Image (cartoon, rainbow over all chains, first blue to last red; front, side):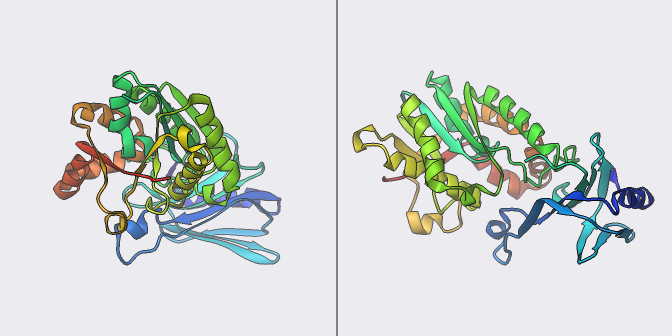
Length: 116
Length: 218
């Protein structure tokens, strides 16, 4: 993965638009957040292999970036994206890393299911 | 000397951070150690520093690191349970216990090392620790191994008292450190912080001198 090139990500989002795609979406602040700080809660959410279809996908921001995917009946949203790649399997992987290189958010799209 | 040690933890690197020194002492004494590792830590957020893994490459990266760490620690019997990170508590708990029980019946460990249920912070730690304790409870009393539990919740000492098992691991400090380095994707950020933060370094150094456990009374 490398730093997001917004124009290249936009082209990739356009390629997946209108197709049935598998979605991986997650955010986390670490399983030890509550132990390491008195005032924090551990927060995490993930969806793996949600099947979705969006007709409009847009990347916005100056970095970190935001991506919104507009579906007929809803939205998919991610904020804090810093890095991306299209991997050897043609999947669009986007992630937000903090200053320690730790993943804080991920948004990924694929035409085939992500491995369990 | 133990006859056979069974280690049950959910994530690649738990064995190293919680019990690397203890395991190295057992394998150096000639005691076989079997490690039942629950997941591949697929949902870990550490990706190396600078990061070199991503969400999709992480499982294979961590499995390779785990095998290298086991090599360093002298673990010759590594068994992967194939569960998914963060989901252990949602699995059928009796089925999990039965899978662990089957391994216990096969290798007949004299000592089991796992996390203390309810005092190990991460839900996967607590769930797999509980399944392991449940497995031991299913054995007839005369066949039950001793169970040593690692615990690091903030309220551990308040609720459980001081640990009753204190292992001096200073003689295998370098072995534990080698295993930590083998888990490169998970330890690089920690190593970098040790370099720049003396208080953090002192805290981590303590874990290279001693490992402590609470005996679980089944």
